[in-house]
Image (cartoon, rainbow, N blue to C red):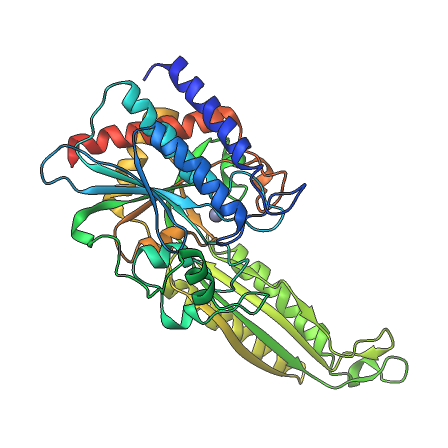
Length: 414
Ligand SMILES: [Zn+2]
């Protein structure tokens, strides 16, 4: 593809992201939630762009938008590309949308050049990833991969409607979760393009990077218990200050993870029940969130951090309890697909940086069906889930060129 055509295509992509960013359920800010009126308008807008690029378009009962380009090649398998079309409240215009709109423009470019791919392509716009309307995320990709469970269907939204009721009202018929849209053997893999939502690419002055894994994540609460007391009458050496113990632990966690990249550990909340300026804190509850690309390393780090919290507590004559509340296993990206993607990245920007995704994505669910790869695109100040979320047209052009190169390379291998 010549550079002028590519620049024009990237400009078109930017314009469409802008247009889609105005399709919202809330005036004045971007919010699109599962099966909302704005989601329907988004699907019809994007469906039109898919048809223009030569795809046939359908929508499943859960509102997933699916565009398919058939290859005439006998025995062809299918490559999946996509991301989510729902948003957080007051969102930016790139999160999710980029991974759906970029492949459409890429396929339109190949069509323009008269390229026929030796594999089918399906572009997926998932209806729910952000867990805004229902608290369990990934409804779209779970439905597509045949992994929506009865327990998911009982989830309720703020108006007390179950997920099942909402799907049936939208579909106009009874719904029971279907099997996966494809057998694994029919698929080549899944590629998700997404803004980084972090500051690494910006710091390394690179437009795009290749995700090596989506991190393992453990979250829980640590409760430190000491003894409440009068701030004026209890001498320092007779205190059992739960907050001072928690503070020592928080700094330990920061230094511990800091010395072991890419491990990250965060204490994001501190709760001091009944706190007052003149009372020595008797009880403190802090959150702990730990992430690492390896499940084993993540689990070992959590165990060590909890041990240290308990050592600190003992020394200070406090009690300390750990309550895990959430645990997600790591999702490694496919080595062959990722190697291929890194080759395309090197061809376009000279160097390819492997990145760990600290946030979850539809690729987590898709990995249960087929090998996955992810391309991250630099975003300004690492900012996401915010109206100021921004990726430059120049970076969109690099990402687009990488995906076109990837599709062509896969042609010679599939
Ligand atoms: Zn996203």
